[in-house]
Amino acid sequence: MRHLVLLVMLVCLCASAQETYRFAERDTCALYLDIFRPDSTAQTTYKDVDKPAIMFLFGGGFMSGSRSDANARRWFSRLTANGYTVVAIDYRLGMKGYRMGKGLGGAMKALNRFVFSQQIGVEDVFSAVSFLAAHPELRVPADNIVISGSSAGAIISLASAYAIANGQTDGLPEGFNFKGVMSFAGGIISKRGGPKFTKAPCPLLLFHGTADRIVAYEHYGALRRGIWGSSYIASKLKKKGWNCTIWRFQDHGHDVAGYMPVMWAVEKEFLEKNVIQGIPRQTDALVDDPSLPKWGGQGHTRDLYQ
Image 1 (cartoon, one colour):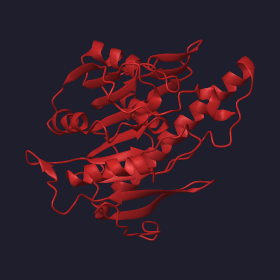
Image 2 (spheres, rainbow, N blue to C red):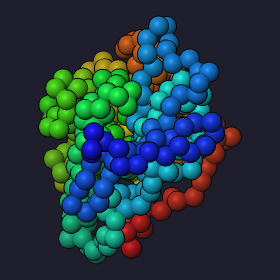
Image 3 (cartoon, rainbow, N blue to C red):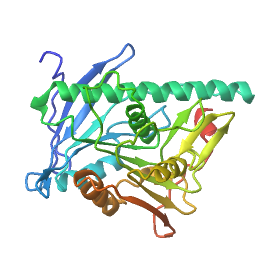
C-alpha cells in the first residue's frame, strides 16, 4: 500500500469525483492517473453486464498535453453520467523539446524518435494496467478496460492493442487484453512497413478525417517507414473479417482528434454492441456533414517540432 496512494483528491468536476494516484516512477518523472467514478444515479451495467472502464490518453504530438485536457474532461462527464468509470493517465512525452533536423537525415532521426515515443507510451499504458490489476481495492477491474486516445494518445492506444495482438505483453497481467479501442485520429508508427496483425485485436472504433495531414489517414512516409493511419488499419482488419468500425470524415483534417464529445451516439453503440455484447460488427461509414466542428492546426507534423 505504501506505493499505492501518493495523493487522493476529491474535486468537484461536473458532479464526478476525481481520485489521483501515482502508478509509476520513471527516471525522468512520476506518472499519475485520475479515476472518475460513475454518477451515483447512473446505470453501471448493460443487459446485466458490467460496463467497462474507459482509459484515456491525451494528445499533443508526444511533446505536450495533459490528462487534465478540458475538452476530454467534458467527455468524461458524459461517460460518467452514463455509468462508465474513466481512468485518465500520464505517459512520457518522448518528443518534448525535440527539434527536427533538415533533409532526409533529419526526417530519419525524427522517425526514430517517434517510434521511441510510441514505444515508451505503450510501456506506460502497460504499467497503468498492471497498477490497476495489483490494486483491486481501486475498483477498476483490469480485465474490463477499453483504451481510448486522441492524436498521439490514439497512436499509443492502437500501438498497445497491436502489441498485444502480436504477443508483445511484457509488463501485463497474464492473459490480459483490452475490451476495445476508441481511436480519435490515430495510427501506428513503424520502421518495418505497414503493421501486420498476427491475430485478431480487440474490437476497434476508429475516427479519422480524410484530409488529416498531421496523423496520416492512410499512410505517410517512405522506404517502409512512416505512420499507417486508420484507413489502412481498417482495410487490413476488414479483409480478415475482424471486429472493426471506422468513421471517415470527408475533407476533415486533424480536428477529428477532438471529436470525443461529438460522437457519443457512435461510441455508445460500439461500447454496448461490440464491446459489452461482444457482437463482431464491421462498420465503414463515410461522413460528409458540414455542421461538424472544425478547428485549426492543419499544418504538417514537421511544423510542431520547429
